[in-house]
Image (tube, rainbow, N blue to C red; front, side, top):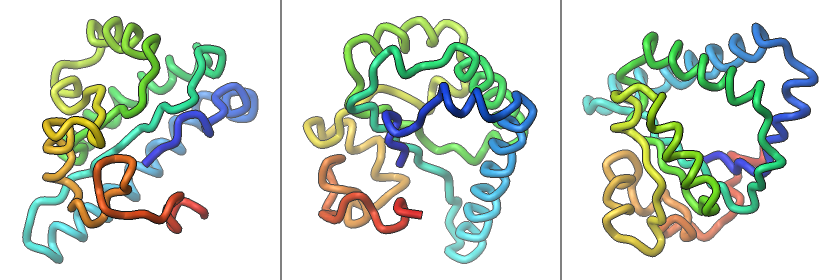
Length: 159
C-alpha cells in the first residue's frame, strides 16, 4: 500500500540524484523479488506483487515533473528486469484530474504494464475487488479497500 499524498516528491528530488533514486527503486524491487520468490518456493504457488496506490488527498501541486520522469525510467527498467513480479497495480481514490493524467499516460506506458494497472474503487465495486483478490485475501485487505482488516494504518506501514 502506498499513501501517495504522504510521498513528498519535491523533497525527494531535492535530496536525491536521479542515480540515487533509481538505485533505491532497484533495491526495493530486488527486496520484493526475493520475498515473492521465497513465497513462491514456500507455498508452491506463483506469487506476484500487488501494489495499491491510495491517491486520497493528492493535489496536482504535489507532483514533481522530474520525479515523474525518473519514475517512468524506473518502471521501464524494472519491468524489463522483473517482468513477472508485478501482479497488479490498483490506483484507488483517484481525484478526477488523475483520471485525465492516467488517460494521457496510457498512450506512453508499455502495453504489458497497462494490462496490470487501472483506476479502481474496490470498496464500492465488486468487479474492482475481484482484480485484487488473486493477490491478497479479503482477510488481509483493509476495510476501506473492500477487505476485513480494521486496523489502519497497518502496523507494518509504521516503520
